[in-house]
Length: 292
Image (cartoon, rainbow, N blue to C red; front, side, top):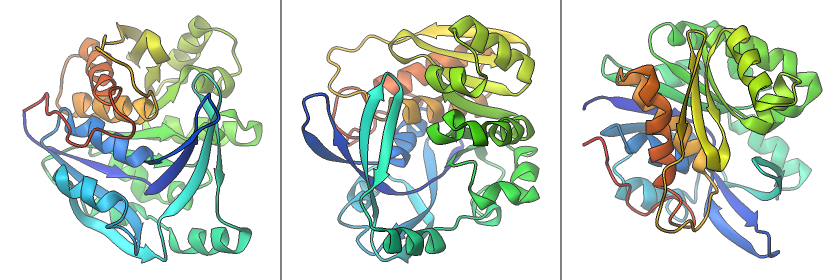
């Protein structure tokens, strides 16, 4: 297997509050996405804005796992931090630890453009994983949709974009234009205003865009060409922490799509990428390359 996956998203450090009320610090979702993509693709290219303290947080992990970082711009004063608290299965509340003035400054500096992402795409690119809010200005650029005509661009829909009623119409519009997106089941229920998994799957089929539907411990489904292809989750010896499984499985599924596997195998490969991150707090120190 050959090729590269471009991963674009925010570099964040999360303070995760667990069920026991204890807090631990872990790298945010983009690191898990990189781990998922690297499960199947030999190379990952990161597009992100980094803080001056990159070496303290993400730097060692990125270097150890051979992530290509020409697309990383060190333009932030420090790595963004957030507090993450799960409120129900698959949904969480994420709050910035920074005060209003710092948040405003970070938003001004933390701009990613379609051109920035496109500069890391070449003839060997299997696909682009993109984590972003529907409110991100990147969706105003026709270039991001032009890019999606060249390679698969998988949008991992941010939870707020799916469950906030005022954003739902825009989220559906963007996902339809891209033609490929990923949501978990609670997000799908909110986004399509339905009450059951069967209704969500039917709504996604009617929506028309291909979708990687994450079903938690049950597994996942790849919905394309009017068909729902389900794969059960992969058993692991010990589940240490499920944080980041959505990012990892989405990026793993994207790599599978880019590699041209049969649609029925996409969800299975996404599940295997998710399983690779279940055994540790934070992304695994060294990613096991199943696709090598």
